[in-house]
Amino acid sequence: MQQNEQHKGIYELAKEVIETVLRVPGLTQKEVARATRINGGQLSQFLYREGSLSWEKIGEIVRWIEEQLPTIREPLASFISLDHFMESFAFLQKRLRYNILKDLYPGEGPMPMTHRAYIQRMEDGRIAKLIADRESSLVIVGAKATGKTSLVTRLVAHVARLAFTVLRIDCRAIARNTNLLAVVYARLEEVLCGDAPATVEPLSVKDAAEALTGSDGSLQNLQSTKELPWVVIFVDHLEFVEVETRKAFYTVIREWAKWKKLTEMFPATICLVGSGLETDPDIWSMASPIIRLNPFDLEQVVELATLYRLDRDAAQAVFEETRGAPAAVQKKLNELAKEYKTAR
Image 1 (cartoon, one colour):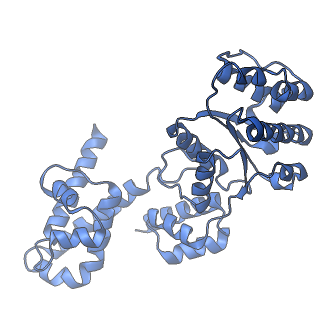
Image 2: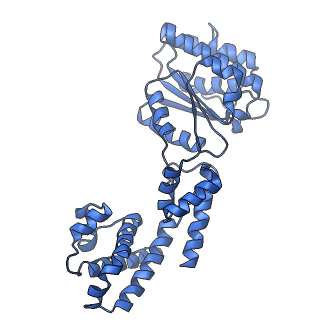
Image 3: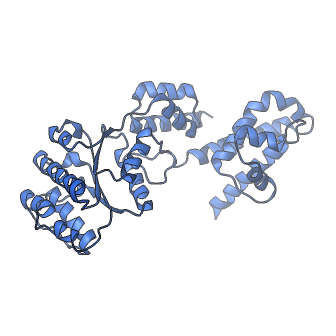
């Protein structure tokens, strides 16, 4: 309740500051909306009819007012105490900055699904299209902490909207002495047969591969008895799997691709995700698209720096220091934003 009251107080202060500025001759609500790219009706609702604006949008208006201050100081002083206005304006800037930056830094590890600091890259759209077009298999590679798992989280939601069936397997969570193929087999059985085994059977790599691709395996038997859903299988952190098991899995994927090409059976897309997979010689035999998540470029760092209320010079310095590594960029921008906030 106290936090809501505090937010209400900031909203009221923002309204007071904006309305005061709009009393300056020549400045109109329409001009503010145009300059800040905010819907005029939404701005009007906020100012006069108990509507709301996000902290970011209010921040855009406050930033615009700051740019206008050199030219509006004199007219402001003709109808209000300029010292009082500047004191209120400085306090509003400080509180807004706190609210905008609060929880912006995602911390280490994958970024939550709806996190506002996620920066889309061209690769995001390309991968989503390959999945929507029902590509047999694809591989996502990149150095550690380049956003692969964060991307997979968003792809899972995208696939769900396409009404595909989703399997997501994190290789870090596979129990010792349980191979990847056995896990894939058990998860597919659960989805396609309706069986949910309490534990994964300790199948050998060879037995699991036979169950997945053999003529008398469960998947083949299912093909003639029911219409299968389209399944998208995300296998994340594949670098944690032993090389020999990875080789066997690549062979299984090649067999599945043959099924689809010859019989249109087993409708599935397999998306392999991991660091350094492109160095596996056998991965190239799958003829799968291999998409690398690269570090951020300068413009992406600038876009992110804008969220942290930092300018292009700060973004340039961070880009040069981190070479665009996403996790390092986020961390450094957060540190700079905190330093700036303290200094203010």
